[in-house]
Amino acid sequence: MGKLSFYRDGPLFGLDIGYSHIKVMQLEAVRGGGLRALGYGVSAYPPESIVNGVITNPSALTKSLNELVNKHLAGGITTSRVACTIPTSRTFSRLVKLPPLEDDKLAEAVRLEAEQYIPVRPENLYIDFEIAHRSSEGVELLVVAAPRNIVDSYVKFLESIKLEPVAVEPTMNASSRLLNATEPSRGQPSILIDFGSATTDLAVFDRTIFVNSTIPVGSDNITAMIAKYLGVSLEKAYEIKNKHGLEPGENQATIKSAITPMLDNLVREVRKVTRYYDERTAHNQPKITQVITLGGGAMMPGLSKYLWDELHMPVHMLDPWSKINFDNLLPPPVIERPMYLTVAGEAILKPEEIFV
Image 1 (spheres, rainbow, N blue to C red):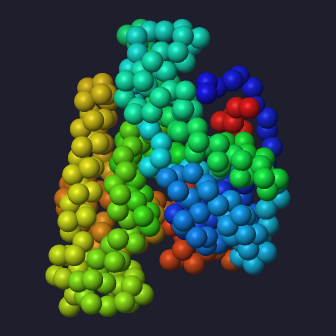
Image 2 (image 1 turned 180 degrees about the horizontal axis):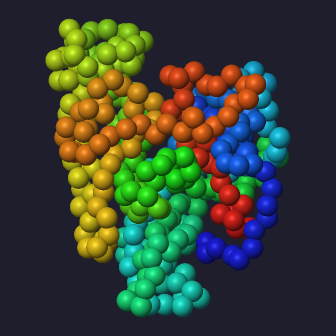
């Protein structure tokens, strides 16, 4: 799936198919800098419509998308060209070092390298790569691979509803693009942690995604554990999580007992990914200096302090909203904004990133 040397300009909108919700957003660049929102919305769909990453019930997704456009869309979507995400947890990403090679030799070298670490036959994968660093000593590339059956199911679904898919990429890549575009600290190597509803993705970001990992628990699991330990309904547990979380209060000790094992597992994975990055990058490169959180689970009070104390580095949430002008559109409610981060990153995909 090597890149070709031409692309086609034109507006597009971002589409993020999450664990149980579809999100859309269209943004446009504003002269002088910044972004303007043209339209956005979210709608639920039955999670069982996607099995092992493959869309198996496209009619359910079509129904959800129609409901979004007809009932839940703020503003409008002005194009049928779409850039769509697939779950990071369903992809493979790795930093690869190769000897000095000409460009026309890289694709075959990457394919051979992928055979060594990806537990899927190369013919069943789409494999792409991005050059991270090149010198007389060799080439460092970020290699990303995704199963063909997953990608093909997304493309088939989009084409079935008369949309033109121009890009399909992992969710974490979209989020890192938004970070790169809106965060003043974008030059610093960072750990990104995306707290989804069913999984938690993390990655090292240093101008590009270097390595990522997924933990098979998310914010819904935290809600369920709080409900179990406190003997309350899931609705009440969700309220407690978002209002109190790990902050001091009458239930702090119980909540901490409930969710600390999950968070400790996350901390161990962060340290593992950090070591992997440090061992495979040049000694004179900057070290990881911060943690950036995103996703609905990142809203839990006290979470940033917990991670800061455990990882001994600053932690803050990705917050690009001051850079996005909603004009006459009502911005998303604060509690809902984290769910739009990934689709916003997909919506700012630049034409030169699209190869057709």
